[in-house]
Every structure is written in structure tokens, then in C-alpha cells.
Length: 324
Ligand code: HEM
Ligand SMILES: *[C@@H]1O[C@H](CO)[C@@H](O)[C@H](O)[C@H]1NC(C)=O
Ligand SMILES: *[C@@H]1O[C@H](CO)[C@@H](O)[C@H](O)[C@H]1NC(C)=O
Ligand SMILES: *[C@@H]1O[C@H](CO)[C@@H](O)[C@H](O)[C@H]1NC(C)=O
Image 1 (spheres, rainbow, N blue to C red):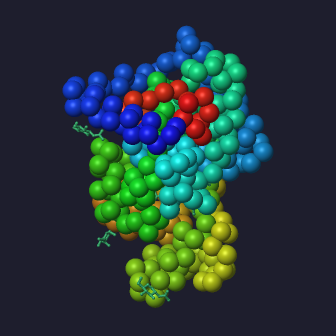
Image 2: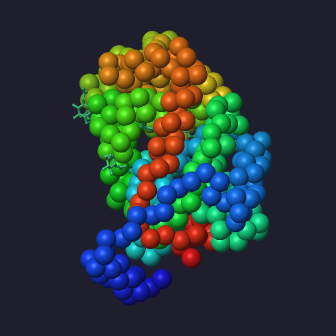
Image 3: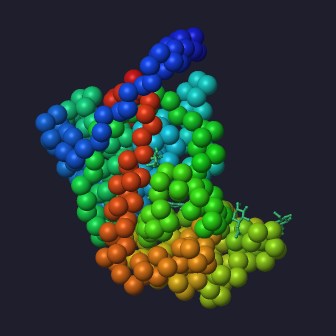
């Protein structure tokens, strides 16, 4: 789209918004594609299963997309848009660049959706289905997802940079951030349990190993044996792209993450802080004790995360990386 057309479109939306408040988007619901694309959910699951056979980590990477899409202007597939003209795109945001991965799995699902039922299933909904399947296929809980999202026409690098939390974040900061989305302290601790699967880079932990809060010292909350392992893996002037597991069982979606935190074996500062802080520790202890409680709270959190809407006009993108 040319800049002139974009400006005209923008002016149109503005004048429309001034005349009448935009109607709220239609509610999401389970079985949204039952008539229009009955195979949608099985297509997504089968392709994710194949992706995991090629690369086990793709489950974690795909699940993470839901968080990074939904926190920035709602679950609208904005994360998937490539830079185009004056739109920078969210992929180059600090929390996403060289880090968020497996976009091609979403492309593969989209291609199969387009073959089965053209122009029906949104990229935003594909992320939600695939995130659920990633948890399920990693040994976690199953749940019904609500669908019916539209894809955005725009992405915001600024919003992504402003909103997405740093691995340095402390519990106070995270509690406040999540409350902006009506996510409770319990939701925060449960959703952080997504770090039960997947990996992170030395980049995300170096400051914690060598200069926590500018002290020139490591974070005292790190278990000393664990710290020796991390020092070896992530030396001070080493390769920041080297990856480490986020918990002791990185392919299995379980409550090991919380038991690790209770032993000072959390990888990110934003993980370990959930045990250090009294407001969140009680939930870490609860979930470490009861995987069932974790699964129930996690599912509730994922549904709430998926309910974040943008309220803007949308479309069903034909290709998740570009607007139609
Ligand atoms: C509470 C605040 C959160 C922070 C500060 C945070 C931060 C991070 C960081 C820094 C990484 C590793 C990035 C890298 O080193 O390249 C990561 C990985 C990951 N995050 Fe989070 N995250 C948070 C919450 C969440 C939530 C709510 C979810 C999903 C619902 C999630 C899912 C994941 C997954 C699955 C990975 C591993 C991805 C992979 O292996 O490719 N995170 N997160
Ligand atoms: C938590 O982080 C915020 C923002 O970085 C900071 O202002 C605050 O002092 C920190 N709180 C604690 C208890 O460390
Ligand atoms: C949070 O809840 C309040 C009160 O129910 C509501 O007005 C607000 O729109 C909600 N915010 C989000 C982001 O869902
Ligand atoms: C540690 O962090 C502080 C504050 O951010 C900085 O001034 C200092 O130079 C850092 N030290 C090292 C060794 O990187």
C-alpha cells in the first residue's frame, strides 16, 4: 500500500471513530469454525506434531507466540507481520529479535488452512490453536480454545518495545504489568510456568550472573552449584547466542519449573523473582506441590491471555506475514 492510501485509510478510520464509537468485536467462541472449516483444529495439530518431530523446541517457540502477540494490541497476529514501508513490524522489537522463532510453523499451518478452506481461518486464531496444541503435545493439559479473531492491518514496534517485559524484570514490575490486562498474581505465576518448556540465550542471563542490578556481583538467589554450571555455559565475554534450558525438563510441560525455582535454579531473573518475592512465592509453592493446581491455573491464564482484544478492524490474512 502506498503512503497516500495509508494516510487516507487512517483519516477514514479516524472520522468514522469520531462519528460513532466502533462496535465491539463479536465475541470469541468455541467451535467457531465448525461449519466453515471443520478440519481447522486437526490441521493445526497435525502440522505442529510434524514440526515437533523435526525440532522438539518448536513446541515452546510456538507457544511463546501467543504471549508476544496478545500483549501487544491484543491477539491479532500483528506479531507475524514483516516490516513493510514505514511499518517496522514487531519482529525487530528487543524481546523478539534473535529470539522469537518458529514463525515458519505458523506459515505451514496457514498454507494448509488456505488449501482446505481459503480465507476463513485467521492467523491470530492459528497462534491460539497451535499454542494449546504445543502444551498438549508436550504432556500438558488440554482445553477448548475460543476462536473468531481477525488479523490486524498494522503492527507496532513501539508498542512491542514498550510493553514486552525484560528478563531482568522483578515480581513487582511483572505483577503491575500483568494487572494492566486483568491478569492476577496467580495468573502471572501460572503463565510463567510456560517456561517449563524451551530455551533462552545467555544474552538473557549474563547481567544476572555477573552484574545483578549493577552490583558487579551475581544474583544471590542463584543456587551456587547451578551458578557454576551457568558460568561455564555463559562466560562473561562469551557467545551471547548460546542457549540453555529454561527448566530441568525442557521438552516436558510439567511443574518442574516451580520445583527448580524453589531450589534457586530458575534461569531468568523474571523466573527466580517469583520465588524471591513473597507475593508470588505462595503460588510457586502451590504449583510445585500440585501439578493439577498448576494445570488448572495455567489453562485459565491462557484463556484470559487469548481474550485480550484489539478492537480494531481486521481481516483474514491470506499470508500471515503481509496484509491482504
Ligand atoms: C512473565 C514475564 C515473561 C518474561 C520476562 C519472559 C521472558 C522470556 C525470555 C527472556 C525468554 C528467552 C528469550 C531468549 O533468551 O532468547 C523467554 C522464553 C520463552 N517464553 Fe517467556 N517470558 C515471560 C512470560 C511468558 C509467557 C506468559 C509465556 C507463554 C504463555 C512465555 C513463553 C515462553 C517460552 C515457551 C519460551 C521458550 C521459547 C523457545 O524455546 O523458543 N513466556 N521468555
Ligand atoms: C523492581 O523493578 C522496578 C522497575 O525496574 C524498580 O523501579 C523497583 O525498584 C524494583 N523493585 C524491587 C523491590 O527491586
Ligand atoms: C479489565 O477489567 C475492567 C473491569 O472489569 C474492564 O473495564 C477493562 O476493560 C478490562 N481490561 C482489559 C484489558 O481486559
Ligand atoms: C554493572 O552495571 C552498572 C550499572 O548498570 C554499570 O555502571 C557497570 O559498568 C557494570 N559493570 C560491569 C562490570 O559491567
